Image (cartoon, rainbow, N blue to C red; front, side, top):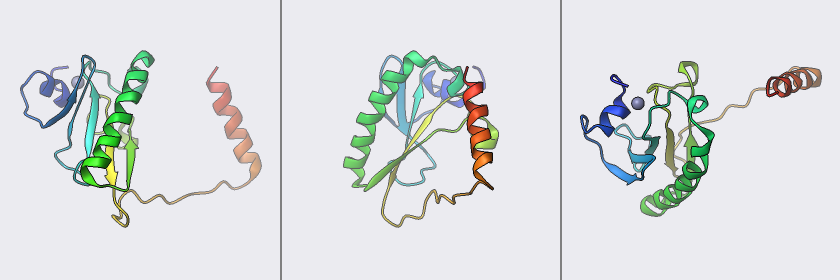
Length: 137
Ligand SMILES: [Zn+2]
């Protein structure tokens, strides 16, 4: 796509600091890292989001994320790692070329706080689970 920053990077129009490249994927340091060592992994072909990406790419993606995640932990001395992937604007997607964030985490770094909500009653959960199951068919 002509106005896509990740496609422009692939075409050599925008510089980036690469950490990995294969026929189908590339990974680089995020220029606005949540922690140092925050890496993005991106399919080389343009897919807007996870739902547009062929599932056949999933195996290579996961095995690469496993290698990359372990390498980030080793290189940064992190105690943990988040994998974050956003689809559509309400979920925080800002670049509409599917990508995964691998974010090294350190005890007490204060990032990505999770505030759990709750359901009003069990029937609400059962109804929603049934609707999701039905929508998968
Ligand atoms: Zn793109």
